[in-house]
Image (cartoon, rainbow, N blue to C red):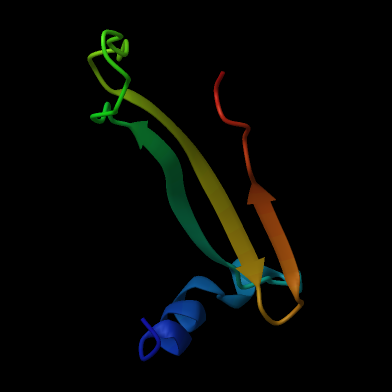
Length: 83
């Protein structure tokens, strides 16, 4: 992408399209953060037996962000974990 960026921008920013408007170059990325709960073995004194749910619990949240390095601006969306 770095090698083709000047040619791509020149093709997209023709004088008719840009029309003296400012253009902001931004880069974006996304990530997924989450947790997975796995049942594990555990110790309990006799005669007690621990109660452990059988199954997986998964929670994920997606984070989106874009940065404009020339202007030093950042825009991101960080939703809360579902309850």
